[in-house]
Length: 518
Image (cartoon, rainbow, N blue to C red; front, side, top):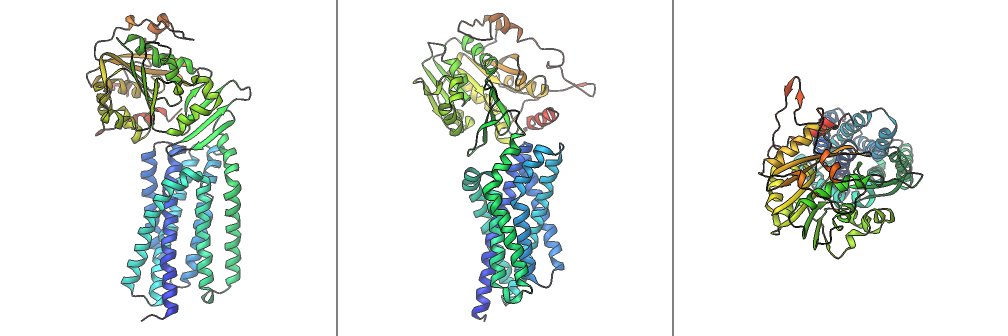
């Protein structure tokens, strides 16, 4: 039977195991979120993060066999290391991204993931052996420590997804979790102080690390903000982390150019958005037999809706945008309101916050015009919105005589991506017409018009007020140069375009390869 002192110490070990495992899983998913935001391709980054973190845990567990003495002291210094390195990880990552050569940020992220994983893997065997030394049976100590670790992992994942990331962001979250690691280490150090030589020295080091992390918690985000500012050409005037993405609004010093970024990707520039949105909206609106009922997928900034409202016969506009924060910004920010002319507040507009794929699956409404203004397919969740399955759902909601227009990235910078999207739309049985336009802030940008019937672009007659688009200009937008048409050559051979599907989401790889040099 264990005495009261042994029971108390074993309880401390179990609680410590649970808390540090919460911290460990939070660091793991935080690194995945960092990679997704800064490096792109969220699925790839989370996959690499999990793999590297687990590899690091294996390395740490193996190395822990060499530690046979001073187990509590070893645990304490591991937690000091996790707290210091993990706490400064997000802050340092933004600094490296802003100032270091290209590729350094990825190397740092992957290195730090393995390192924190190794330290996390190091601590569990040490705690198990310490519990065994106290007098707990080995099988019981192993089971209880592992239970505390796994249960803590669940709690950590939930905390990061629903509290830390949306409320504190990546920098403050890292510093806060680092503080918790160090506080746990200091508590364990104090409770086992009779076993520790030079207790005061170790405690002083821990307190100094904790002070550094607390300073980072209160002031690190401001410094990281200055680092992040380096990623954008103009000063940041608004920044928030919603439940779905990071929203950045910038404005140049002359207050002439306002730009909206989502997860680092440019969505619009106030100086030339009209070129983009006029081509996105007016060809489909003027080609459709009727336009009473219009669906907009994406477009939470409200600028596409502004163009649609130029048609008096429009009776209903349904805008489906996943993120309420984007719509809230569009309805409250003076600069964005100036661009969209308060379009989302119009009585004809209904805003629905849900996934576009799910909306099409669940809706039974036909639409005369469908405008698809969604972010580029740079991760798995967005890729599904560029698949045969998605465009088949879109087709099923398109009224006979109706027309759809889809933004489809750049036929110059991502030629194979653009024509793969076009092939995917056509594979659903819809007829397509291809357009592209020069948008200075984006470059040459592509759109795909779709209809149940064969499209005759000469039929399009734009009769509303525009700043750029005319009927003559529109006809020229259907002509593509040799370096941007569907005849794509690689290694002297023509590329065979295949529809992108949920089962074969090859568009992500093509997209990443196409944009890596831009």
